[in-house]
Length: 423
Image 1 (cartoon, rainbow, N blue to C red):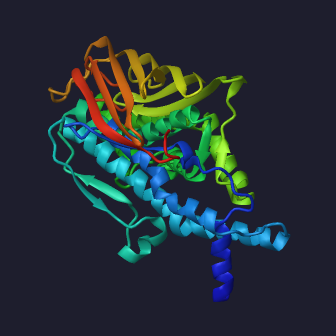
Image 2 (spheres, rainbow, N blue to C red; image 1 turned 90 degrees about the horizontal axis):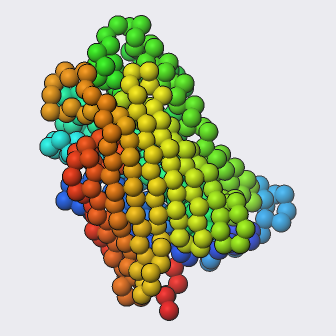
Image 3 (cartoon, one colour; image 1 turned 60 degrees about the vertical axis):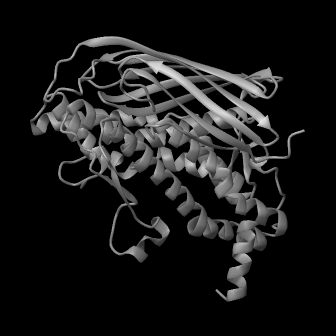
């Protein structure tokens, strides 16, 4: 391909045949933190960075035009978008998701137990050959405690952070009219497909290296005092079957469709999830898959809203034959009370095995009922600038994305509206 032809292909990938409204029109950059440097504040901050990281695409869309009205020019546009995805978009998404996985997944859980994690990162997949032979994007060191009920959640936390970030992407999109920019679609698919080859392989012993899913299987074995090759194979089969629930996700398949056809073929940057309802009131069903300290768990979500107000409820149930664990909860967000202030809240209850992370080789804890509650607010203090805060408390127990210990927790931060100047 000549130099001029290559430039034309990349320009085609950066431009729209028919420009659509950028998803950043109602996006908000949010930087929130807590003293523990924990999972939810980190995940929410990284999630909000996506429109900023992909702002380059909106500039190119506005300034460059490419007519795809003929088959040849349509083909050039498709190839251009594929090239841009491989060279720019996928590496950006991989960097973002790797940070969430390592720093706010493994790292956040390790910090809960007084560990001081250290990280090693490699170049993203497209450019990894430049850093020599390696098969990983990031690794977290110095996170093991030697205690069963802390090491299992630390190992699972990388995938937990990715799945948790996917949940926030989905919820934020539903508040935003169901709109998802192609970068958010790409990140959602990448998060949900984390370690997909290992899950599909079924974790045969000795073949997975140090991958998180393989270590999770081995640590579950130790957590429940199972030590034979036959019992490990049974645990691996149960987790592989449970993982099928990850594919029962309407947002995942809608994201794949819109990436391939809406963006890849038609060149449109923004897609809309098909919320059900009439007028401003809508419903949307969802599912989630997650790894708990006791095995896989499965979520059913139901979102509802009116305008930018969102309420949701969920049920979760564990599929492990190793223990019994169930839970439920409800959320509300974006409830406008005037003067730029919106409120929200959360309530969660569960029944699960007792977490005994003070004891070594403790296998037979009680099954306990627990719960938690939270309030949070977003306040547009002045023009584009705002404040964000959450105050919560819970009993000891596992709740996706939240501290394991009992007691108060929360975060505080600032927000910047990236859309048009508010009136």
